[in-house]
Length: 308
Image (cartoon, one colour):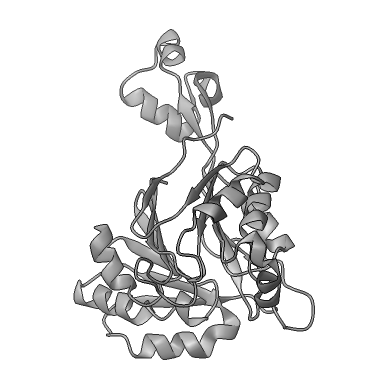
């Protein structure tokens, strides 16, 4: 994973300086687009990113500030003649809304719909489904606790191994033989493990509209980069509880308990012109996690890989 691009950071309504939601996770070979709110297509132009590499669009839920930019993005893909499949992931309960949004977009792309989940959080009765199987390679969801069914996303790269040049030299493996060793796992009695060390896959978690819940904790666990909503200040904890959102301090606590590397705060209420105090509240409870209060058009480099 290379970088996280922030397209919008406002909750519910845009402000003069903050667009509604929109986020891109850029990795080698494909880009993920999360929660495209109104104006996402224009924000992408300002951020200097294109739709050409987007392979997956992930909606946490179908409140408008998280999905009303979808038709514009899909229409731009059609205009730019994107010819690879585009996978759209969303809660099953939002099927009617998603299909309505897709219906007004330009046709011409290979769009594949992937609803997930059965039970949700919020006001739905019954147990919340805990989805443990990936919905795509490396991509998992967990149920959150919002006013409607909502899910967060977690993307984990496969673990791999880093070759050690001094050990390769010591056993006389070089050139094309190195590739053969990596493909086969063993060459001339030398195993890949002897000349390499483990390289853990990087972990990314995306937690939007939710009250504190087990699903958020599972998504955040061990994340190198954790993106969470931070709708309210700790001073407005009653409002956060009423509308099932996180306060800044709760976002910090989530990062600390999960052992996250970097915490990116976003989805700020328009009542806060200056979000620096919210970042300080989160920082005070985030443990060792680095805390970043996102601004529109920020490009956040993915943290260095953790040691094995």
